[in-house]
Length: 336
Image 1 (spheres, rainbow, N blue to C red):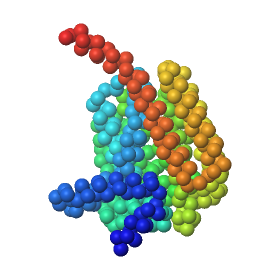
Image 2 (cartoon, one colour; image 1 turned 180 degrees about the vertical axis):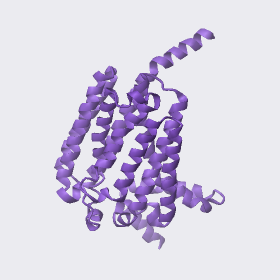
Image 3 (tube, rainbow, N blue to C red; image 1 turned 45 degrees about the horizontal axis):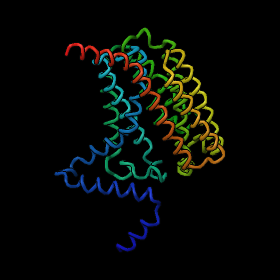
Image 4 (cartoon, rainbow, N blue to C red; image 1 turned 90 degrees about the horizontal axis):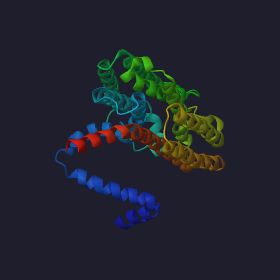
């Protein structure tokens, strides 16, 4: 039996084996924690909240916050906004898994999600998801009414998407519109009157078209399961190649807004260089992706696009924070 298990493992690719070996080490360590089994549902809900995606989702509006303040934003309002965002993102992912439980059973990529494995019940997931969204709105009340309204609109869009619109050809619109609302929400935290200023709108439009890239990229690996469930995703309705073309065009539009942001927000040459070079490399890959629209390349476009937008956001944060940090350092040296 042991020889058979070893033989089956050797049939897998080196990356799969490396990942499995790494996960095995983590599992063995977690098993040593006393009473850990009692907390399995809590840990499952934490996994369902997608912590890694939450980090990316937090970095992007954080860059908008630095643009809104043209420097380091006030700490109190920023912490409240971060809590709101994390609660809302966690809620969106948990409710999405609740709504997708049957579809996830059919797609190989999603068959190990907590609800499918029975680690947490659908009822618990729904209750926790709704409570997290309500809690995020309560926290938003301590910022201002504009933030409450924008957050409520975003939550409504995502819930509607997960419950119904995901099954239609316009299912991409709610997440894209929610991404558009993030920068105005970040600006509204510090000055509601500037929620829809020109910089906020340009960043929001870049976010709208960027959201289409990872969203559509995820539809290619799930075509078989989505078709079985009669979900009308772009890959099911129009085929993999047209989905790849749509991903390419969406990224081109997003990149155009990011390049225009350099001039509008008076950003530095390093920002322009990385956006142009990094974006250009991704454009070349996406062109190649059109000729080879397979699930593997779709996942590469998914992760590489998230990496690209994350680096862009960090560059904006570093650039806007650097002058103040240098001044703080000079004052520290002068006082000592």
